[in-house]
Length: 379
Image (cartoon, rainbow, N blue to C red; front, top):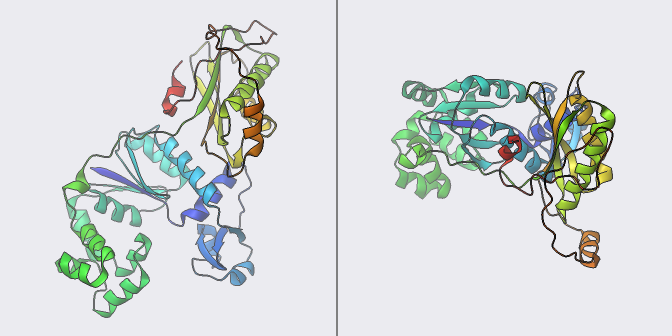
């Protein structure tokens, strides 16, 4: 059995996802335009009459928020979605932004994630069936499909649904002119004929309707992108903001220095309670890539304030910078690094603790750049 997660109108959904993290999502909905046409829109925008293909002028006559497409933001949000999903399953296979396959571990826990994000998913014996099921699932839900369910679904689906699977409009119009108004009759058409008529798209359509053993192969293990992490442990737990805040500032400075020429677009702050062992964690996906302490510090301290609860005794503090990328232009980083004198190699510092009310010059570095975000949960 294989799961499929699908996000329709992903370019608009991604920008709305970002806005929600910063509490700036427009109530009237959001539409993304490209070449003076609406490329994607949120549900609220669609209810206002703004859908894919609407002209920019027509969309601007409504109260819907209009944005240009932002591929960098889409990619950053997609990484964030996969890393959040990785908390529920170790196996994720990304096909494109807005579409991935996964191996289900805990259906109940995953349902909370789907409901919180509003994405739709399906669980089926193979990838094509799971994709068709996710296509028809309600937002925020996952439907389970047996072989009988799949047969019924193929009978019900109209040929127009292929548009949402990125099949060209000309191909769909050709099939309709030939008398194919639903997917079921296409199951009797040979691959040779479909490929002769539509080339690669015809071969792809045949595979959608006739899954092979390859489509039932296990989903590969997910490899999270590199993340810069810094951590600090107190022998005597810190209980006051005046103790934790300077430590956070120092850890953030160390993490930013470790970025080098890279930027980050996701910042995470985590604390471990000495009494209960509970791990409190909050993160924020930024609107744009950043690599300076001055830009990241306000966000980091805001996250820390949400975690500092009455009675909390902080035993461990962690800062993580994720969604790393090389900026298109970074001459200042190049010169800053090349002009800095190289220091002699020094032995790694032993774990350091902070006494009450003091922040030492050298904080312990518990982790370097790592490739698996789950390592952040280790003490």
